[in-house]
Image 1: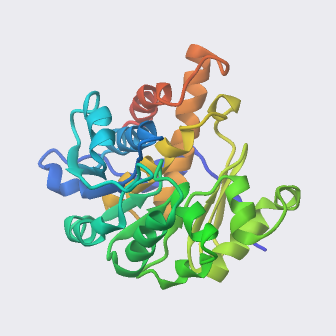
Image 2: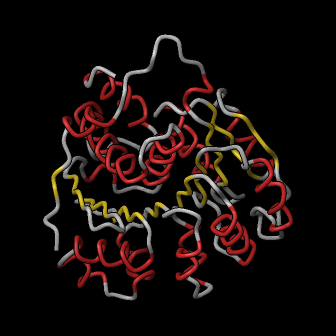
Image 3: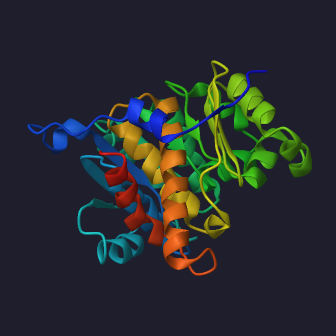
Length: 295
């Protein structure tokens, strides 16, 4: 097994480029976010904010009207595409054709943050895996849905390796191993899953491992227990998708996003404490990380 390499400022600076003086919004890609439900509107907002702060040129939220109303009240820079809802206050599968059409020119798409886990969510995720041509990032309920419908192998049907961002509990469900066994060797678990399902795995825990289908693996020790709240992963999913949308290699984008997310959380903890900080607080501190790196 490959020994995990430790992520650092140097790694991020070797990957991310300064924004060109003569660039425009089209220079930095288009990201579609298929996220949110009546129960979890905030997850969609955190994903969108994380994506915008990481530099994507255009970020489009595709969700039900109540989610769009909530998010658009405080996020002014996104584009909003209202979709019809189902009886469970989630996105209806009747929107699949619309989602595929509206996202066809997007360079990346993130799905799952606050989506809800039901048959419609599964149908939407399946359609995206089979048909989306850009870089696909699946988080939270997108992963829970394919597990619930016993279709983890669906990941192998994607046009290019999907980025998945499970926390250790979600990983346990996906791979069938107990959490305590995964914790004994998180690197091995991430590498084996990435190889078997041809995907990029971001295995989130107090130490996060990022593995590629080609057996590359990096580890990030940045971050702290202040991230142990609902919503932290939604921001990370948006950040990862944003870097993918800008054309960065998906594996390197995932590595950079994880490290930047952790660095921002460490600054936030110094400012607000691990007890008091909330996930949305780290978005402002992310700006300080970019500034510190000269980006």
